[in-house]
Image (tube, rainbow, N blue to C red; front, side):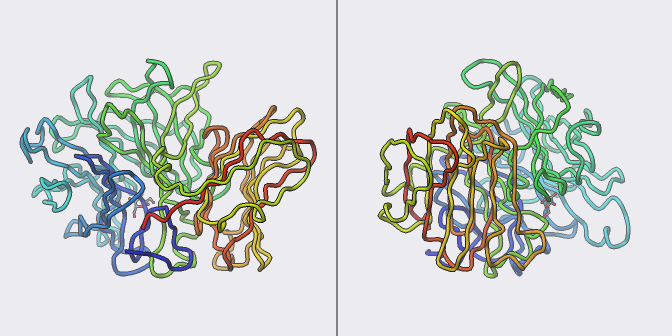
Length: 489
Ligand code: FRU
């Protein structure tokens, strides 16, 4: 199938039609990366939630599959996760034929309308045919609500050391950890977060996983938490904590807020489960939108895309831990032509469209630039004959990175969409930028993913001109590659 409507992403996942929000239940099994997602199959705005479903062999090309989970008498099917039960702890499959088990939130509308607080509970379902068909556990819910309005988004992992399943749950202003031997009976272990991190909005879609500091055997645990509002540049966004987890409690190192992405459009992301050990990567995908305006962005046939899948990498410098995000290496599969600008010293603008032999979008730009004195400004600018501009640039004056999407014409659908998104980063001797541009999104990875910014844009006309912009001091081009990207559809 070919999807070519205006604004339709060409290398990001979108549902064929209708509304999508959070990615759910990502699990790898027998050569397939599964992606489920919050889906309303009858409308392009949020409504009764189902789990939509797609699979990919390479994280880049997706095959749409029929809806996996439908609402039932217990409620809508909200966000959650999926695991492979290899030891058949649940008894749903066998050791030869392990069950894929989905753990999700039931959201009971009647309960909510009646003004009760206990309308969210956790249910499970299993599949014995690679996620194609699902059976719900007959005694759902497996985790009842203790009387808390926000009690949702279970992310389950297998904790090797204690030989138990651990569920991380978002509970209003904190996360709660539960454990289970069989995915059915859950025991409360501990809470984390009331006094930690950002509380600009309700806590949602948590994820807890171990990761080694890059290039070492040192293991740390990452707790990812999305918050419904209060992001560094406004709206819903995702924070993370670095710490330790002993099967019962998460202990955070430090109490400062760390953001996974400084853009406006990366929310509710979590990681894939069951990625083969020989691969060893931590793979992440987020919903590329923001609750501030998600339901009114100007796409009608479908609404919302996901971020490009990312690998999360833990770095350690001077005893500080930092989680970097980079596009998965499978990006290579869709690189087509490459145009290289020769290494040179430059002062001022250089216009790339006159030089690059292909249409601007979809595009990957890889730049490695050195400088002696920081430039006033260095970055890229997309523009078109309608006079629209989208800029992504580093400022040596403020030591910050910015995406400016105020100079677009199609912004009136929301008062808060047009924005100048900013984040602090200091680049004393140069900068590395990897930029992915699709029909309606830009993802910028600064210095190997030390800082990430993901933003949507809806230009009235297609951008067909790219400039690399620099002003102030001289810069020296160490690498400048422009890849035309292929459509994945
Ligand atoms: C996050 C979220 C989740 C919830 C789902 C409902 O975007 O609010 O907390 O499970 O969306 O669609």
